[in-house]
Image (cartoon, rainbow, N blue to C red):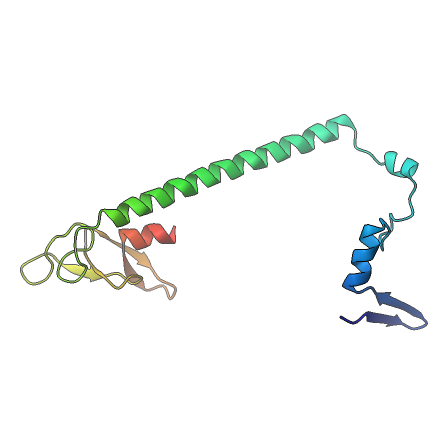
Length: 146
């Protein structure tokens, strides 16, 4: 890598390369405005207990939200896997999900936009596509999009 040079008239500043930055990090020196502060100056900038408590509350709340989101995603994945295990039809002459006969003597079928299989109108979900056109999805593909 090369150094980048920023030139502003007579004032020239060279951006350090990655090797130099890594070396400065190991030596605990750097390009920060706080590099040459003394320990005493840093201690004067510490947070009081109230600020620490507020920060810890925010962190706990964020962890709780993350945990709830992971649980929700886990339930969705489990539900999707169960739906895939319980398919009953072939997706051509039968509804992929319920196995009902499709065609002239059977029920009306629709074509799933994502998996390209046929499903009955009870097992299909009508939704808007990217071009504001209505498209049909089977329940499995609809869940997968969620």
